[in-house]
Length: 147
Image 1 (cartoon, rainbow, N blue to C red):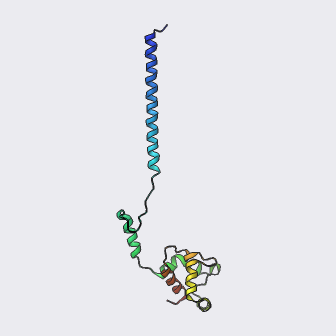
Image 2 (cartoon, rainbow, N blue to C red):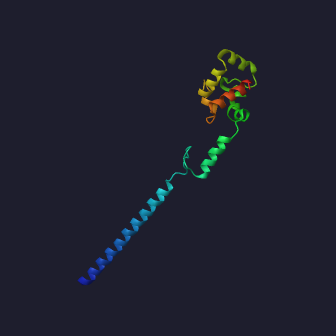
Image 3 (cartoon, one colour):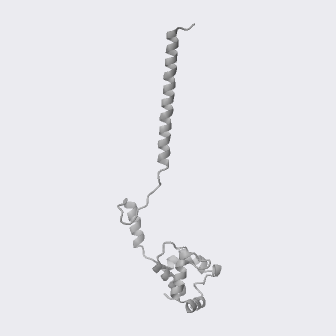
């Protein structure tokens, strides 16, 4: 038979092992929570005009604002796919008669408004979401040959 002193030591040792196991489990969970929180952090941030931002964001915004707009380059990037082929009824850039008829019927201002807002199969701004209204007007002039 085991003595009461021995039983008491076994119980104390069991409680010690259990306590260490629980503490280790709590520590491991805390570490996992920390790792999960780090992985859920945003990959980047948005820098709005007028805010004191990291140099990278301000540099990108400044260089984009200072970029020179080219109607030809923008046309090649965003418009040529439809307006070179007449896809979905788009007036072809090379077809002056199409443009002359549209300008005579609706007027150049209406064509610019349609390009800004979208018309028929053409989405608003003709896929150039970053183009300003003035740049869209330049593109319409370029397409119609009224440059």
